[in-house]
Image 1 (tube, helix red, strand yellow):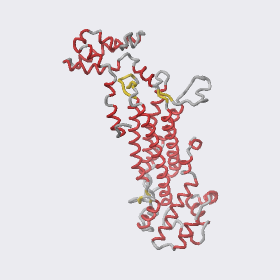
Image 2 (image 1 turned 45 degrees about the horizontal axis):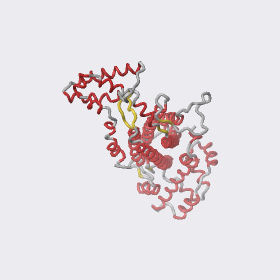
Image 3 (image 1 turned 180 degrees about the vertical axis):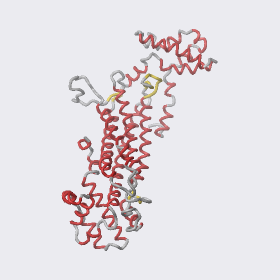
Image 4 (image 1 turned 135 degrees about the vertical axis):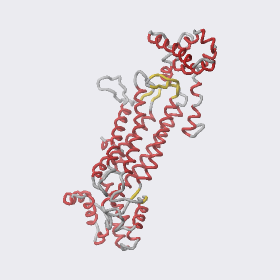
Length: 446
């Protein structure tokens, strides 16, 4: 599935050619480093950097005999050179080349992911300002609570994605590291100066210490960060799926002309994109556990991590890239229905204002317990009236809950008719939206 739908830019960073190209990049940087230290002659350095190449078919042929992919690679490279080939892979071990090369792949891939997140954030931000004051009902436990705006929902998503963006920026620095410390990590055959020269050449930071491999807590943090990002993206997708339910129908995925929702029911417009995103996010999260299990290797290393990383690294990046691209498109084209949001907000006949009434009574000297009893008594009556088919809004345009409260002479005597009616104003619930947006987006006006 990933192979079929992968976006080309990310996919190319993880194919065989990219893998061997990264290995060759490290090997050439190594040659240049030795040359700067006076070990490799200028002529040999020039020949290697100019002529060294690999042949994937030839690597496959050699590996059938050697059963070692790095040796097959260096043999293929050597065949493209003359006597100067003796300097290829000089003084380092397989993991020096492989781990440093993988750092290049992870670095470049993570930069794409960060761009993907920026696009998604901008899409969400744009829609948040569009619906900053679009009233809808807030829900807890799936039950109507109090009025909010759809802009606030979107701002929550933006703020969450911003945290993931910042975390991945930090992780980018953590995984952009290389090593050339030799077979046991003791730098016995490669001076520290060489390691620093090569890593600088490649645009990487030198690890402070390694054994035979770069420690896999770095990889585990990367994959865990992608898993956390996926969890937030699934949260967004699940919310859109809920909003598109026929009984809710406050927003829905854009339905293309000619698109079909069901082979059996022509009327169907299903949330297939957000359902697909939900599934992709489950896959991305599944890579976190093997990444963490790769941290523990025998002594200076074994290769139990190797087969795992051949799956989880390309698949994590390719799947995350595709998922983010799909989610951005979904948000950009999301169809929002403010009238249905308002209709649902009024569905319970004003019960969403119950806390507002509750907070007024203690101001008149009523205990919280007694206040709660009064407000809940009328609320339960509204629930019953609605079940019996009574209209949520009366002929005067008043909500059923307001009508009941105004009919309570004791309550009227306590706080007065005008105070009760003021408790049913939506502006009370939106008065701090601008301030919240200022905190989230750092802007007064858009």
